[in-house]
Image (cartoon, rainbow, N blue to C red; front, top):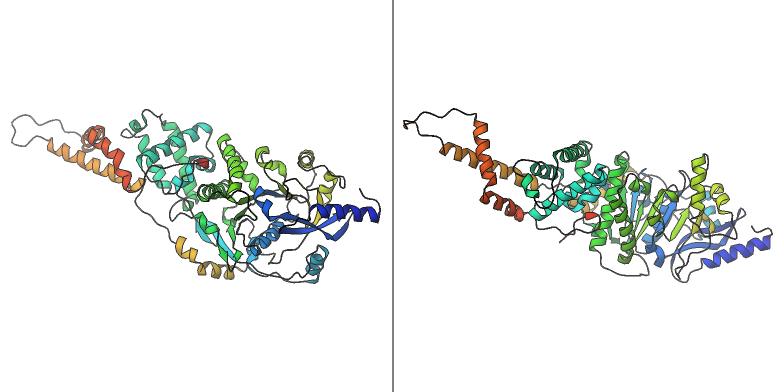
Length: 527
């Protein structure tokens, strides 16, 4: 630690010089050393390194949300769209100017933000499945895929494998799975007498596993998850909008789904996977095309299968080449798997607390994720940070990590509170995306096709049963009367086993879909 004023000036100057990049950068704040803030020593993240991903972490109340807001505002000014998850409702304020005060002006000056003035930014508000005050975000079951859906349903590995088989069958048969009732209809078909033969040669589906999947699907639907799946499906290209040259801040309200973390966190990964599938390769860029901030990101990994973890790691690694940066926001770096944490080149760590032995262990592990510092005792610093302060290290312009910098962060310029709900509703209603996604569609898909197929088969069986009845004028004794359903069932079995019906099974659904190509997470690629 520096001991004299000259030593402090030398140290802060050296740290500031390490962050004095030639190109444009996100301004985070000023260097702090031994409690002294050096407003001339700026801490920054190069725009070109934002696609190397990042971490914003810290205990509740340390200032993570305001850090997201600060970075998002500068990205918007630079023409970069941003995706923000809003669990508490207080990020909606980005759409309105903040309230100026002597305290904020003084902090801005102290952290090198000369000329700081309040400002609002162009925003678009979304709500997953329409659960909240925003344009509905939906995905079809087909597009969502078996790996992500297994995560939502909390299936074990065996059940996940069975669900993959169900999707495989639906894809090959051209049965469009648009909403949950489509998937439920296909599961029921594949364990019925007439459908269980459809999986011959590629495996089978036990009635017990099918029962578990059906129960979980019913629970998901009853819990409100049914509104997430359906049409019109969200086109992730709509996240890349500009308004008067500024990047639009896409704020996804999650307050209504705060008790369903598996649902919303997994849906966010679908958005990333869909972006990866459909954005072109751009390699290293001067600034990203889009930056994602995933708040409460530790929820992604609770109970996650090996397949899911592998897909998350792949997505984070590969989406960088599409010009998309991903920032994971959580309380402690150790909340994230090592494979993911190792890909996050930019770290903004707010205060950590060590009240329990487990806290102390987590703190020690967190310290090991930062470069060694000649200026700070990182472990002591992490427990001493004030609100709005953070330990920072980023990827410099050469790709090397910068020295650790205790940073006093600049204040955001937009409203650091919830936007007036009436104003938010007005902005949503005025958005062209409300007209595009506001009304649900229910076109013919797997449920309707299988229902119609069953009805047609029953009608045909009943007709054949009637034809087989002996004529009244015949002298031979009348056959023993059977229950109508038994007669129809016997004839139905014959119809369902016929070559004509099997051919119909293979071709009937081609009018609503074609064979599906899948990529990351088993998500479907749009055609």
